[in-house]
Amino acid sequence: MEQLWAPWRIEYILQPDRSGCFLCQKPRENNDESNLVLHRGRSNFILLNSFPYNPGHLMVAPYRHVGYLEELTDAEAKEHFDMVKLSIKLLNQVVKPTGFNIGMNLGKVAGAGVDNHLHTHIVPRWQGDTNFMPIISNTKVLPEALKATYHKLKQGLPDVL
Image (tube, rainbow, N blue to C red; front, side):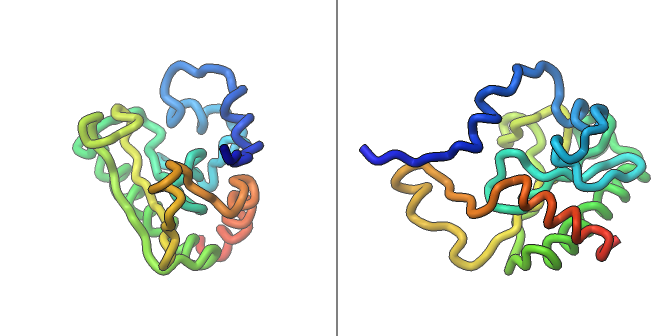
């Protein structure tokens, strides 16, 4: 049997069990670096996904706990979309993807891991970024640690604001 070492996963394994909504909790803690919060607006924020599909996988979420797009005010919805655009601009400058997957999973049946606090995923893509590992070993290889990606994106943020 081959072993795949992933020592950074110990942080996830040992974290205390948190009840409640992490999209509500993280911005309230005012510990942006450890919570991977990249940018804060008036009613939405951008954070790096802790369990990314690809390096630089971002999420935009409102501070307010809402599960449906139609529950957002016009101002919240506009800022939300503006932050999606900002995320694309930032990722284009810093990690230089050749494409993106952008979307929302609204409701558990649609695949939402958090089905009562809407959020938009922005996943950078590169030609050939998928390989045989997920298919034959159910393993995704990420070439960069989350903290390194966070710091690169945070450093590039002033250039796109």
